[in-house]
Length: 111
Image 1: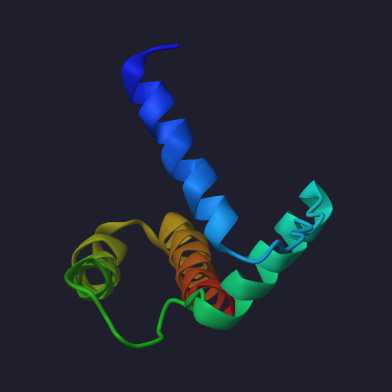
Image 2: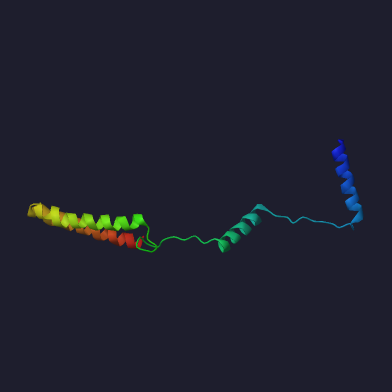
């Protein structure tokens, strides 16, 4: 035995002799108990926040720029492209574009 280990064991023996003997029974903690306790603690201390739709505040710069870009594309199609197409193409393409634009706005709100 090294000298430092021998001195450490003497200190422990002296310390044990001066205290009244007590029996310590460690608690049995299983993995499932630990996971359950950890999950319970996490549920009460942390709250996960998630947007309910794409129009919900707080808005960030990417969200606002997407609104502006989407509006600009719709206006560009209606003002510049649709009038220049022949009527046989203009009516179905404008209808299709309008349906897709409305669906895009609706599904942004829903998801």
